[in-house]
Image (cartoon, rainbow, N blue to C red; front, side, top):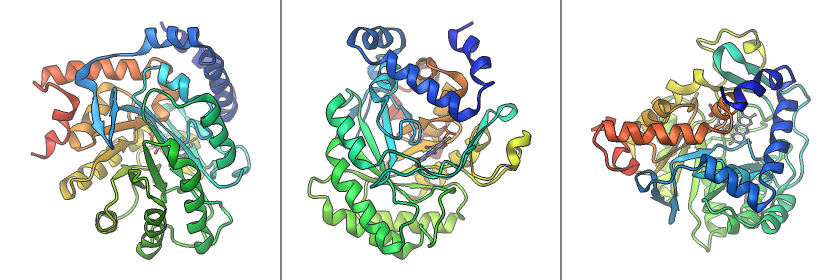
Amino acid sequence: MTLYSRVRPLAFTLPAETAHELGKRALRAAGSTRPTRAALRYAYRVDDPALEVDLFGATFPNPVGVAAGFDKNAEVTHSLESLGFGFVEVGTVTPYPQRGNEKPRLFRLREDEAMVNRMGFNGHGMERVKERLRRDGLPRIPLGVNVGKMNTSNEAEALEDYRRVFDRLSPFADYVVVNVSCPNTPDEFDEDDPEHLRAIFETLEAENDAGKPILVKIGPDSPEESVLDLVDIVEAFDLDGVVATNTTTSRDGVRSPQREEWGGLSGTPLRDRSTAVVRTLAAYTDLPIIGVGGVDSPESAYEKIRAGASLVQLYTGFVYHGPSTAKRINRGLLELLERDGFSSVEEAVGADLE
Ligand SMILES: Cc1cc2nc3c(=O)[nH]c(=O)nc-3n(C[C@H](O)[C@H](O)[C@H](O)COP(=O)(O)O)c2cc1C
């Protein structure tokens, strides 16, 4: 029995957001000194060249990352590195601090190993995140920065929001993600309307003298044609990849009573849907894909890799399975690669498409 499996029942008696905040505080404390970080690293990291992925001009020590939303404000980035994750995506970061929606806004659906959230882009804003990244220094693993707009911004203001966050934070990032797929922010306009997307990408490209890799994060609920239309736009702008997927508004196959709560659903019930999106994308484009949605085990990570994802991310799986999640997945991935005769993760990417 792990320590986390003993603590989890206690943590799960607390409201989800309170437990999350306490968990982050513990993580921050654990990662706050060099010796504790080294001890964690020793306990949790799985170092093996077969796990390495070279992408976006960086080397990812393993393909298992932390999805956006967990470390919104870059507070526990170093601790997450010590727990053996291969990369961390901070954000969504907005230009100014924002409170987000009224609480409660995060719900655990235990029977389904899922969560519903309607956080609504709460966060400290770009200046504080920038200050923290400068003060704490960058982790030794690649860092993604997920950029977003203020909830109150109209279409023109949104462009300026993306531009400003990109301008402030892209120097710290190995890749930047434009998040146009959050299902729980109040939208006065259609965020993934092709014209709006073109305007966002034009704005960012004009700002991107350093040539930072730019990806777009998509939702799982759009019809296939609009996903492929979006890929055409991403390719036309020479962008660098797609993160698939964000949370879903669907409640198909979900049993817990909290299914009635409005917001985005994540975790196990999203797994197949997001893998299907990864597969559709990979069959259509050579753009790198980061697969996310319901990853919580070696098998669920491997299935996204075989469907075409070069990297995977998780959030909900970490909440349910605790600090050893990355280690367990990475160890299991090595076994699965060996079983199937692959010498590396990179070799297995898209294996199911052939
Ligand atoms: C509480 C919570 C907050 C999230 N916040 C963000 C966010 O700020 N930006 C974003 O792009 N995705 C956000 N996500 C979505 C995750 O990055 C991920 O796409 C989704 O949860 C599916 O992965 P999972 O099943 O591993 O949780 C959030 C998810 C959760 C559960």
